[in-house]
Structure formats: C-alpha cells, structure tokens
Image (cartoon, rainbow, N blue to C red):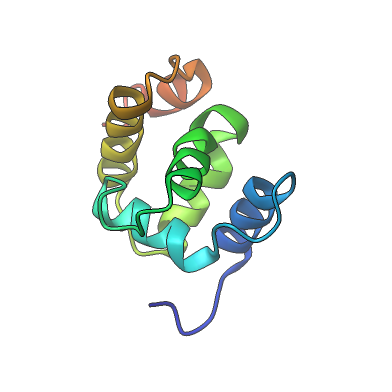
Amino acid sequence: MLKHATQYLEMIATHLNAPYGPVVNPADVAAALRGGDLLSLSSDALAKELLASMFIELEPEFIGRASYEAGVRLEEADALYQQARKQFGLPRAPRWEEALEGVL
C-alpha cells in the first residue's frame, strides 16, 4: 500500500474515475502496474476495466512516469497492457506500443 500517493498515480486514478466517481485509487494503479495484471485487485469488475483502459486513454509518458513512481519497470507495465488486451479484448494502443519500441 502506498504511504502517500504520487503525482502521476493520482492523475491516472482521477482521470479514470472522472465519469464514475471514486472507483480506483492511486494504490490500485500502482498495484496493477506492479503485478503486471489485474488479478491482485478487488473483484470489482469496473475497477479492473478502468485500469485496463488507461493504455488507450492516457499518454504513454504518464503511464511511464506513474510506473517509475510505483517502482515498476516498463516490462511490468507492458505485461499489464498485454494482459488487459487479452482479458478485456481491448484494441491495440499504438501510442503505447510505439513508445516502447526499442526500449523493451
């Protein structure tokens, strides 16, 4: 659990919650990035779907900075992206994939 939320983790949680009210928090974002999957989160299907959508909705730079704040390597963040695509049938996120070209 995060002792204090950080700027990008907070921004991602706030963005994802905007249409729904408080569903995810910065610690949820960090846990998903750290785990590389959504299995470690609560059984709340909406929270999982919102976290999966971050790769489509947000700039890769924000996710990369949030990953750094959470102490996560980009490989783990990309594992979350791959798992989210598989679990939710999300379309490709070309901006995310292009940002990681040559990095992974």
